[in-house]
Length: 378
Image 1 (cartoon, rainbow, N blue to C red):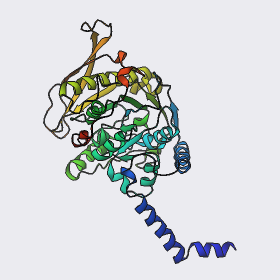
Image 2: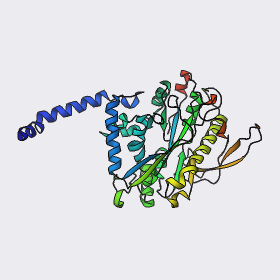
Image 3: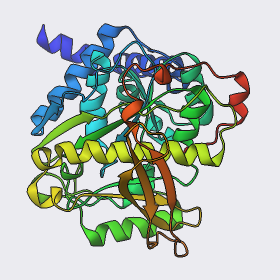
């Protein structure tokens, strides 16, 4: 009986049937990366979540969900901004996906590079965990559906700068995620994956080579060093702690055409809250030698330069509320394949009066004209 069963399973007819079913699945799932909402029954997604969590456990990665500073209303809409990218974004898929699927503290749909949906099996795992293409049309479609979305603003440039010895957050020059928040009146929710940068170690020589390859080919040839120091995707045993900060809310109603001043003001408050989140957990959730170096925050220029962003807090005297102001300033420029950068100067009032379920945090629907105004997160 076992011999007959094996013969049937290995027969050309069976192989053809499996191949046909897989092709049909690809056709049915072709639009899944751009579709708002779930693409499969919850029980299917939950099975995939269990498998991913088990694989992470098998690799020695142990997750911890840090209790949010403020109560996050899971029925409201947020734009979750997560850091850092890491060498391969291991935690975002194997840990963040199952956490989002559980609905605590909320469920979101994360935008990822369209190229990843071309990889068999990875595509199915991403779709089931709520990943969608990080494109203009898809992000707008998700927001229009009233869903929370997740964005990693650093993208490939941050991936190419990943260093297991230094925590960092890199932001794009156009700050599209900030503009989306203002255009839809949706709060930004910072999320930090403490330990993601240590899931793999990085070599400065290999990272420099990867940046050179990317500059010439557009392919991020990152070579992470995993378990036993080998260049493979098997992770190192690591404790990853996932923390959420306070929601950072746009001031006033949704605005189809946010001014540069509005964008910089909200960005300033977001960066300040990100720094607060990092400072609160870094010394208990990161290796001591990494925590003491702090969080390096930089913003890219369009020519490839990098501008460091520094936060200095001074007492506010403009509103009489007693809340401090967060002055976000840039100093000397660094280089990432472009000319030198000049200083960045952004100002943002304290986020202390705009958290949780305050009236200012009530999402407002935006006009359909937004669709033509959203730029790609590249």
